[in-house]
Length: 396
Image (cartoon, rainbow, N blue to C red; front, side, top):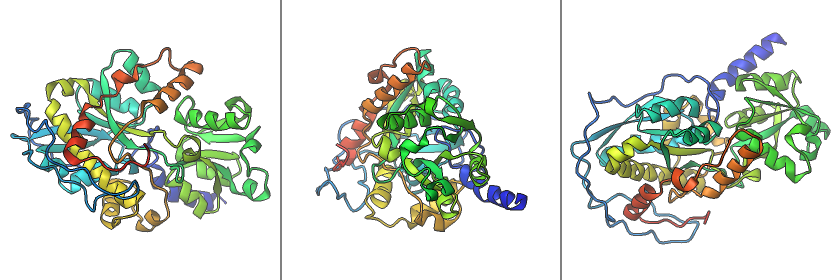
């Protein structure tokens, strides 16, 4: 049995590294663009008006055949070098596409990507302008930092759950699911759930779901452990359920260890598990570079949207970039996994953030509400949409 568990642990170890939405696991060195010797100074603003990108035609389920290219706006000259901190997970797909298809370069940007495993690791880098942009979850660490005067801004969404395809889920142990002992959510009462930590977004998701069936978090027990230990705990019947992310969701199903009991898309379909941050110091120093970064990123997001949300474009090239940048190296896994949604116009609705803040205040993990009108800065995504054209939006 020990050999079997060791084998299982080895199989899931690399896959679990991609589960960094709110966690801090290591990651194999990812390819990063070589940085020039220093970051260029702010060039004169250019192209602040709409650049001629016509709004696409079609229905809410159709999009242009390719990502709209910016027109009549020359690249920044001299080029501007920026650093982006990110966890190198699937939610960063728009970044990989913008980098590999030259969208950043077309805007006159050189983007150096560096590891930032979680919001707690990213925050000091943004606060000191060591990185100009960051990709991470919105959790109590971020909100408390903003309340303490650390000035960062949310620029646009990077990932959102979808009602038909949640990328995080509460997984029921397979034998309990098969026997009927844990097949419906009310049966979770008295069970033990494995998760990474308390007072993070999974608590919010589960509490939201539990309330619908007359339960609270106090009706279950929690076993705190690393993601890489959860499959073994399920196999050993040490826990009854586990909160997991892709690709572990698919891995557990394929190995017959667990089945989704309820997923995040069913609980909070409009929630943003990942957003794009920027250093306020850099925004003030070089707003034009921020406009260009968001424009390039939106182009990458739209390419992902067409391939993985609308299923209207070939995925193969993007999958190769995910293999390049994330720990999931098996191409066959990409045919089985669930994938996140994105907003085709980069819009970020403040209401889910406010609901999450309500939860944090209720639980005593946030002393006061952050003003989302000050936290979210929509001017940059508005610039990008004006240049690239507005797409039909199924979420609005």
